[in-house]
Image 1 (cartoon, helix red, strand yellow):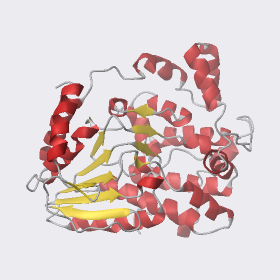
Image 2 (image 1 turned 60 degrees about the vertical axis):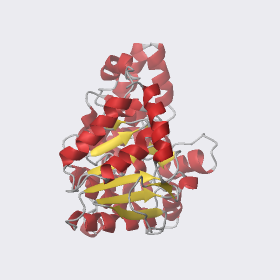
Image 3 (image 1 turned 30 degrees about the vertical axis):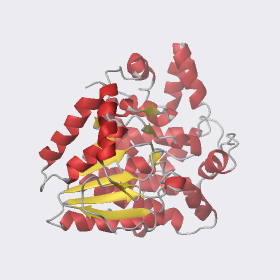
Image 4 (image 1 turned 180 degrees about the horizontal axis):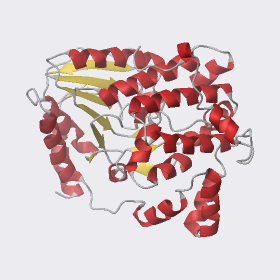
Length: 388
């Protein structure tokens, strides 16, 4: 079925589908679940349903949300009556636009524990998703960045729509692509992960699936029917779930070339350097309009962030998710100790002048010793562990 037919059919389906309190329930039983701390937790038949419910704030992830989701996820994993977990979000602008880094930097300025607790518990949740025995479906409709990527990409199934906007833009705020970015980005193939991590390039719609970030693409108007089909499955196996998602993917997946297809050779040739300096030099030598544009983008990013990010991906490609998250937690604490994280958040998210003053200001000033300091083990009592 082509996209137009898919949308026409789904418009009829939407009229048949019941929408309760802004949440998708299809013909499932009436829910009495309420929003608490920005999250709705519910069960529909044999499915546990997590709904991020801060639409006015683009479902930005904060610590109270993490503390609601994690114990419920672990409880469902042990529950013999739960055979599937679905995570989705209220509204259609964002699945989750990221973690609440403004609150984290404000805490870091005054030595508040939030600068440690947020990353520690977020990564524990990320690891729980990545190791969950129960099949996990993330419906990433809308903006999906940073913390939203961590809530989705490590699950077995990730469903993108034409409204999905994926990016890991952390080098622009003096951070790095965390939440397991060091694990999944190097596994996208070739040097695509390096490119996405260093430039913060935005992938949209079906391209999120074509890049390997999502496993399926379904038109947003089909999501209510797809959700209904999933929760109606009686004690579903992973194969049953996969069959439903494949059916919708086949109906709706557009016949379009991957947005970066024509530049994959350029990406592999220019973004495979061992150092950021090598990557910049390769782009300068390339001299094409595309390469010049990438060079301009990289020159705006935090030099420190770019260097630690490249090292993160080089190391993370050989680590387990748990090992990678432990490494990334050490890196976050380096960012909290440094200057660029605070300056980047100020320039991009608070004052929004888009003119950060990086310190150090050049790649040359970010020595190997500086980079290594972000990866050094923490005192044992401060190290990240996969369980609370």
